[in-house]
Length: 313
Image 1 (cartoon, rainbow, N blue to C red):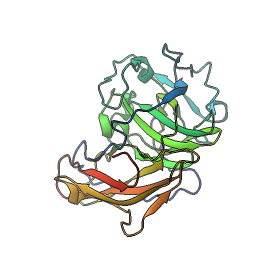
Image 2 (image 1 turned 45 degrees about the vertical axis):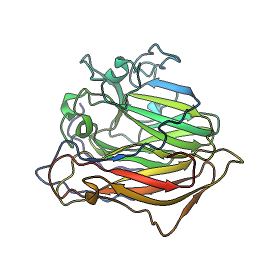
Image 3 (image 1 turned 45 degrees about the horizontal axis):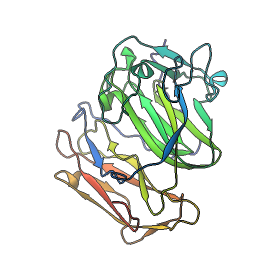
């Protein structure tokens, strides 16, 4: 029931350039490892929302809310579109470094996926205006899409493209959990939108975490960028968001420059103009496009360092 559909329906206004794929892809994993700027920094946070997409409620503190076929989550537009649920009894590999300790395996054994009927799948969570971390949980649990390129989709958080042409299987393989985290400065609503590319978008769990303002600290979201498989001598691009994590009355942060280091640094790049500093007021963000152009086969990695006036590294 979920095969044979391809589309390019995307939220209006998206600027997108289709990346070509060669007949032979160079590696299962090629990517850019970002230097996490928040290491060593205590974070004051509180979970505001948890949803077990496509499944029943799960134990936790707080619990993971139900989002079943008979009782959809109140935060998803299930009544307005073709999104529905699917589950598996297969064991899920929970060893990926992105998965927080204590995450229930059952969270990754169910999903809500979005069929071809418009509108696109959308989640809206009421929150107190301020800084939040959005955690999205993925796993490829449908055997029909357990190959590179079989399921590819986009994710927008607060109107910003945070996952472009995302392929869960290309990143971690089948029946393995992975979590993507994004820092946002929101109004009274956190909006998460999914866009079709190939087959149908699917999500296993969503967590919205309230983060207290951290004066004079710069956050990066995501803290690592994985490009998946990229054909030789072609360029793939992903977006990195830099955010001033301070609150009202805290100082602005000046982003001065970026540099990429490591053995494979020459195969990575970014569009930040080192000659033009960017000043971020508290809560303000800027995006940096990071690109990867492999010239030889095999897994590649490098470190992106961001020079700024904040107090954290």
